[in-house]
Amino acid sequence: MLSLLLTAISASADDVTQQAAPVVESEATLTRSAVDPWENFNRSMFSFNEHADKYVLKPFTNAYVRLTPGFFRRGVDNALSNVMEIPSAFNGLLQGNLRSAGHDTGRLLVNSTLGLAGIVDVAQYMNLKQTDNEDFGQTLAVWGMGSGPYLVLPLLGPRNVRDAAAVPVDWYTDPTTYVEHIPTKNTLRAASILNTRANLMPLEKSITGDKYVFFREAYLQRRNFLVNNGKVEDSFGEEDEQ
Image (tube, rainbow, N blue to C red; front, side):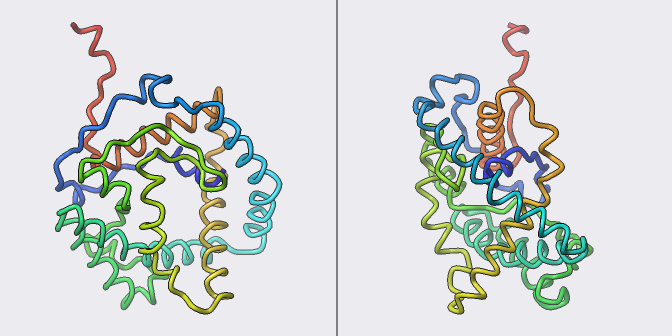
């Protein structure tokens, strides 16, 4: 459910990352049968993830929010985001987007030094605002790989075939993967999950209609936005004009 809620967030990409040419995605988001041929399986996984969130993740998150002050959670957010600038810069290089890679590297260097290991986002005051991170799924899209059908994975949530194929690379380019001290690694992962879930609590009220369809469409639109660095044409109303 955490991954499902993440896809419901719509954020504007900063101009500094808008350098690469748009990647042409299919219009499968408008054709339910084309984008979701495995809907029966996906709905089963969606239901499983919802139960996992309801009975496990959400109760722990509620306790986490009650026990920690807001400034602490913001600091955790900043520190974890700072670490993820590393794979984002790496994927920017793979995509040939040097401006994006340079921006992410600059944020990493500034916040890792002046920002107390990333706890304070100092870079935002130096015209290095936080932007949407690049991942290997986006890199595969830039390289020309099609998105493939929509897929819901247990615990990991919504993906398409391309993003599912990118999971191992995303895992191995995540710096926390290489933390050898197991308690520290587990603490980092738990903090990341709980902090993110806590930030999404207020968004639950905006979910309407069929929740499965809501999250599916949110995911597809969000990924299309990210792959194209925010350069997505709005085709609404085109048929009426013809």
